[in-house]
Picture 1: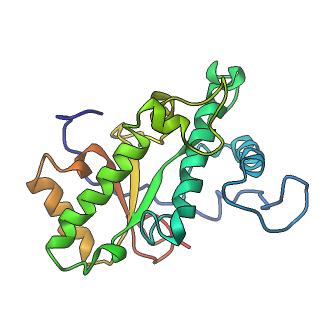
Picture 2: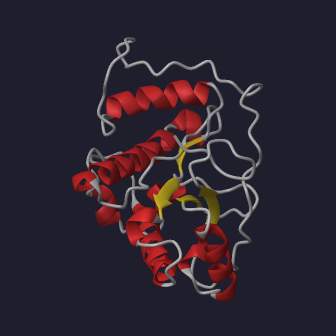
Length: 222
């Protein structure tokens, strides 16, 4: 997963049969009630991790499609906190030894905050955005990882542990990032990756979503 890794062939996600794969899951608070919560509430997040992994869910995808750092940085801060929590969660003996399901965090970013999907300059801007994702989640220093809210104390996740908590696609073994794009951008960025082997996008397994929920070959978005 370092410089010089082979380009990833952009491939769709497997089709999801939402009928046969329905999950018996209700989004309750850790108190057992329905209500609102802060995305960076680690008590609530831990509760959700426990419930999701009990059902066999192995990764979640936080939504940063309005731009990294939008809403005063709150969504990105919550995404970092979730990733660090997943790293600590997976290091607990019962999961580290394979006795329970681990939780991982993939990433999702968008094209619309970067400019027109048909503007050639947007291709480079997407690369710059993905470089930010790479450095924050897969090439973080220990100091940066320890600085994530809630990631402190003797059990704090290091930069390597943070990278290990990222979800890697089972086909390519590369970190999954889903791009929320206009339909016209998908073929343009796919061609860009093929023409530019050094593109940061080739370090990721790229998936696409365009808001047409559950359309064959794309990731869903709500």
